[in-house]
Each structure stands twice: as C-alpha cells, then as structure tokens.
Amino acid sequence: MRTQVIIIGGGPSGLLLGQLLHTIGVEAVVLERRTRDYVLGRIRAGVLERGTVDLLARAGADARLRKEGMPHNGTLLTSDTDSFRVDFTAHTGHSVMVYGQTEVTRDLYDARAAAGAQTLFEVDNVQIIGADTDAPQVQFDHEGTGKALQCDFIVGCDGFHGVSRLSIPQDKRRAFEKTYPFGWLGILSETPPVDDELIYANSAHGFALCSMRNANLSRYYVQCSMQDNADNWTDAAFWEALKRRLPDAIAERLVTGPSIEKSIAPLRSFVTEPMRWGRLFLCGDAAHIVPPTGAKGLNTAASDVHYLFEGLTDWYGSGDARALDSYSERALARVWKAERFSWWFSSLMHRFPGQSDFDQRMQQAELAFLRSNDAAQKAFAENYVGLPY
Ligand code: APR
Ligand code: PHB
Image (cartoon, rainbow, N blue to C red; front, side, top):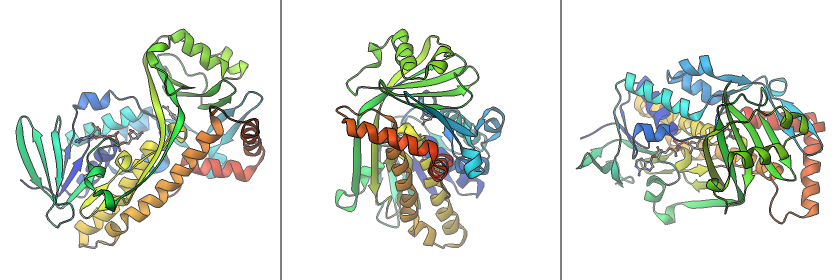
C-alpha cells in the first residue's frame, strides 16, 4: 500500500496538516493510537493566536470557531498588591481567540471526515522504516493485522510520548529540557467566568489563572506541588485556594460550582533538534513542549504546520525542496521564541520552592516594570498574540 504523506498522530498538529494537504490535493493518511472519542476527551488550553486562526480558516475548519470563539483584546495580571491590564489590540492591532483545543480538534476531525480523508484509529506498534532513504514506510498493526504503508514523507505529530522523535538515531538529535518544581491543578466548572478576559495571578500563595471555554464553562488553575494529587483536592479546597490568590474584588465575585473535570499537569520546557531526519519531519509536541503559562503549545504546533505545509506545497507543486530543507531551522527559530516567552512568563508568575527574598523582589520589580513601561507591554502583547511566522 502507498500514500503520499503518512501523519503519525491524530491530535491538532496531525489533523491540521492533514486538512491543509487535502486542500492542495495531497493525500495524507493519519495513524492515531487512540479512538476519536479518547482524543476528544483530552482537556487542553484554549487560546488561539491569529496565525492559528488563519490556518484553521485555510483548512476549512473555522466555521464554528467564527461563531463560538471569543476574541480577547487583553488580559489582566494581578499580584497581592496590584493589578493591571495589558491591551493586546492597542499594542499590536491584534487579539487572540479563546476557543478550546478540544473544539479545534473536533472541528478538524469533522472537516477530515467530510473530506473523506483516511484516519486509522487504534493503530498499534507503529514503526518508522527507512526515514533516511527515498523510500520510507511505516509499519503498524490495525484491526489485528500487520500493515506496511509506503510514502514520500512521514510526519511525526505523535506528541511528546510518541515514537517519531525516538526514531531519529540518538546521535543525530539533541534535547534541551527544563522541569519546573510545581504543577497546575486545573478544573472545569459549569459556571460563568469571573471576568470577560483571562486573569493571571502572582500571589504569595502561588500562581492562579482564570480562563474560560464559553459564557457558562470556566477553566481555572492553581499552582500546586508536583507531588500533589487531584484526588487530594475537594472542590471547596480548590475554590478557597483560588480565592486566596486573587484580589479581593475578583474573589468576591467568583461563582463557584461542582467541578466536571479536575487534573494536575506538570510544567516542562523541552525542545529536540533537529525537527527533521531524512524524510521524517516532527511537528508539535513530538518536537517541543512549553509550560502552559503562555498558551503556546497548540499555537507553536500550528506554526510548525505552517512551515511544513509551505515546504510540502512547494515539493508537490514544483519539486522545489528548499522550503522542506529549511523547515527545521525556520520552525525552531520560532519554537525557541515561544519557549523563551513561556519560560519568562512562568518564571515571572509562579512562586518557586525556596525562592529567596531577592528573587521575590525581582518578580515584583519585573511586574512593576511591565505595568509602567509601554515597550515592555508591547513586547508582552506581541508574544502573547503570536509573533509573525
Ligand atoms: N502512534 C499513533 N498515534 C500516537 C502514537 C503512536 N505511537 N503516540 C501518540 N499518538 C497520538 C496521541 O494519541 C495523540 O492523539 O498522537 C497524538 C498527539 O497529539 P498531541 O499530544 O495533542 O500533540 P499535538 O497534536 O502536537 O498537539 C499539541 O496538544 O498536548 C497539547 O499542549 C499541547 O496544545 C498542544 C497540542
Ligand atoms: C486555558 O484556557 O486552559 C488556558 C488559557 C491560557 C493559558 C493556559 C491555559 O495560558
């Protein structure tokens, strides 16, 4: 059996690339380890950069996003002594779109099904063969049968725990990693958001984030220990911890309710270089991870897809391989800027175990500078809405 592009992983990266390739008549087969429902059951972030919105429109998967997405022109940053808003639109002329990643993935699955493109679910034992040759193939088990699929290119969109990155020989790749000494305890509640925009809070009790999915579905996070367990937290304990980290005026108007989802996510920065080996390309979490503070996970996956789609369009259109050959370098240039912003924002807003008084003063001074300096706010806003591709 043969196809043009094999995409390993049916998350946002793989689905977005598959849909874009479909728009130029390039056949891609998506191999997904889980079921569609399992993939859609994952709770992920919900802030889309303008570039991501534009790519979803190009993929023909933005109808619901245009109707249900919530444009946000700014965000509130709070500390125990101060609060201020950064106006994205005033500084950049752009906003972000608040729309859950689960809904992005659902829209992409629906678009893929409508296009009649092939997605194989519950695929097992995926093995990449000959990625460093001109005849790569992927071997896998599906519905109890061993399969081998030849192709022109393999794209690893299989996330941090996938097989693609590890298929690159260890001496041909280099990893860069930072683990943060805390996690995020997140809940979903069918309650109205506490504010019209997101609120990032740096408090003596730890970080908190107030986000949302729609007018009656809120997403909240509090910083917690990496040794913590979501089962240790009653809803009441979560709400109290959240209120303690917010300014009184905001905490007083917080509408609480039962959690419909509660989980802890670790915070990690990770990049593998290069993002290509022969006919194998890596996209999204398969190549890099960011702490969720800057909402860059999905958006950086989208910029990888943008660069790779450009390369595949040229190759299939005219045989020009230059954009493919520069994919890893171009994608990584933007990945590292997203890593920097996510690391900087995480370092600014969280309380680190054993943080010295001097470190605490540095956080306060950084927040005071961000509050008072136009150029600092413009830099924040440009990173948050999304740097140009
Ligand atoms: N074979 C087939 N599929 C696999 C394999 C495998 N060996 N390993 C993993 N997968 C699938 C997973 O089941 C998942 O559906 O690959 C998909 C990877 O999706 P994501 O982990 O969501 O990664 P990506 O598509 O790059 O999206 C990045 O998702 O994790 C968030 O914060 C991240 O928002 C970012 C976005
Ligand atoms: C979310 O809505 O889940 C969310 C929003 C912004 C972030 C992280 C997560 O920075």
